[in-house]
Image (tube, rainbow, N blue to C red):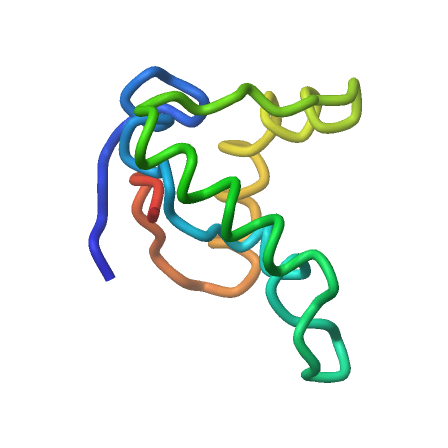
Length: 93
């Protein structure tokens, strides 16, 4: 795994993840039953377009998602304490 230190949703973050499948898009690749998703081709085309154009369309972020992003560091620290594990603040992409 390659660790990239940058802030989530920063220009650097979008540049690094451009054209790369992400965990949030995994359901567009394979279903929970292990079968190929019907949206796999569309997702592959979207990622290819990002690589070719060098442009990533910003995704929708609901209020709940914004709150989750805002509280991410607090949650990360809490999970680390509860499970007695050390975590890097770096984002993995």
